[in-house]
Length: 406
Image (cartoon, rainbow, N blue to C red):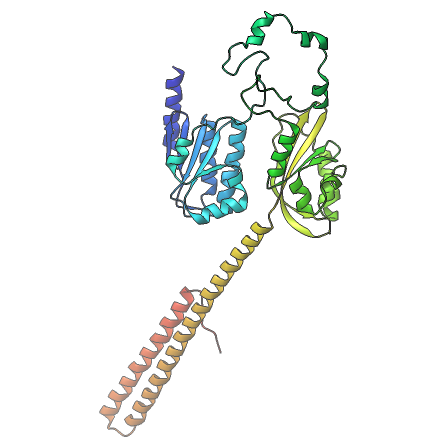
């Protein structure tokens, strides 16, 4: 009965979908348009969020037909990624156009969302299998779920090694408090997660990452953050996060942090906010910053992710310059065309007036009847000149380019 209700709900939503949505079980494919820009990015964002809210376990944004996409489209995909991460939905992209891939790379989306060259590849990807085992299997259990031989020998009694601990945690576990305890090969089917592995994962990120305590003091950073701001890795811990922004912004940021105290489950704040960063040598550069609250047993922390957007900003500047140059070229071509029309009109007026003058001069030596005919012809010629002047003026006004008065 629940399945029928869900199918009915999906059918009702499909009637309201702006873009085609194809469901296969709980996997949805949304076909995106040829051009994605500010005019339709909002609709695309709402469509993707709507599909996620319907309970899709996998959402494939099919951009096979998409040949152009601007920053508004990238922001729509980024927002869908954030909602998918919260809802447990796997978001995949199908991208074929090189210019679209370039935009996703500059915006960093290709590092967050799996990208495939074809819809078939994205559909066949399925749910990725876990690579690392974060939690070891229960003691005395093999990877196939059957009790191990050693567990069978104990017959439910604690082993001698466990008895020696008298309920106390082993010394090795005490040294690694706060991290997942590595499990031996006989206890888990995956590789152990150690602090060294976690640090390698953090240092492999392209973005800078900092974890700050409740008072704003930096507790730890990855290597990329230190490199981004020109510091040695041990220099940053202990300094406040505001240490990485220009001095004139530090007080405002400190007040904002003090007034905002996130609780458990609070979503990321200032996600993707454009700010300014200050390197150790004092240079200022544009950054994109996201803050997320992290609740731990030892207190409240804030996870800060910082991305250098200098390249993206330069690309935006180049795009603005290109648009300005194209507009100036169009204006120059329109001005040249208008000047040519004005010159042609001037030549026509001069020639016409010269002919009228010759006709009137000849009429003075003709008999009365012939003179009247010559004067009438000159009058008609003058009317034609006036008509041409009026038509040219009206055309220039309709095109928004009024002729200059001398």
